[in-house]
Length: 128
Image (tube, rainbow, N blue to C red):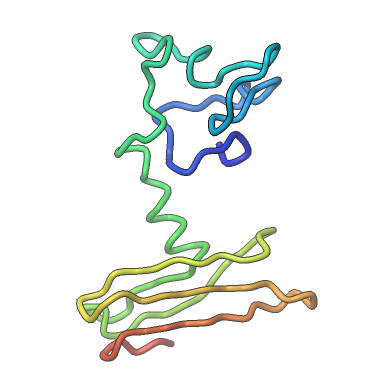
């Protein structure tokens, strides 16, 4: 989805759509497939499937916990453990809401493979 210009989670996606597909954030060039208009099944044929669908945002929780590395270890977000897993990503950054304010995190993979982490935690949140 990202390679096709997605900035949200789509209601439906099939890897077969990638072949000869145009990005969704550009006009469709002649000879290219329109991912939104050309694909879909059942009642989703012809621009009927959503490219910004609420229930499809389920990966967000997983990305926050496993890639960004946020794990609440004390009730009320008083203590949060940060343990990122970037895989092949060069960097990742995000925010996490707490009762004390927004926690901001950025991880950058250095040339030696180590991860540099920048954290801006609100007062009242202990980071381990």
